[in-house]
Image (cartoon, rainbow, N blue to C red; front, side):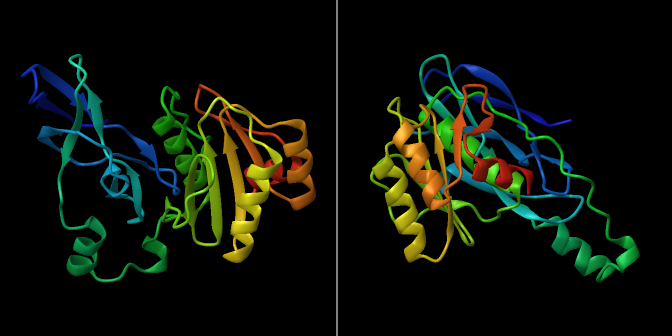
Length: 233
């Protein structure tokens, strides 16, 4: 069960009780950011500050997840304080040495993807990042090159584009993503909130680009065969 901490809005002084969100580690264990009482108002979003590293207590894997935030009724966005503890895996290695093969827990089958309702453009980006982690990609970060539209995400060997606009993606959007991925010797995948034009789907099939549609429930839906294969891998 995730922990709860008291939070006071610095703008209106309203009191809140915030419960930490729980995310699925790739090993199957639920993890949540360690919270501290208190929060600060977010005046503008900075990508690097919007993520926090959380370590799984079961397998010791460290992953980045959205930094806990809470929207106050006065309109202020509150970023919840997170404890900066010594990683649990480091503590275990110092106190008990390296685990033997018999002590390493076997990873259970991959659990079903846990969606997050999409209400904002940031939610769409978060869902895409969570889905990529669910597929097994780690170290999700913002791409070095900004795409012509939407937000670019990157992982080792992968480049993704997230388009949270209400305009269906065009063939040019797909081609630009594919060309950028080619220059970086990476695979690519496209997430769109409004879907794709018929021409864009045909171009993606020619280039081998997996296409996903982000429905408002927060579940990426495959659009073409490449996306079906990626989701099943």
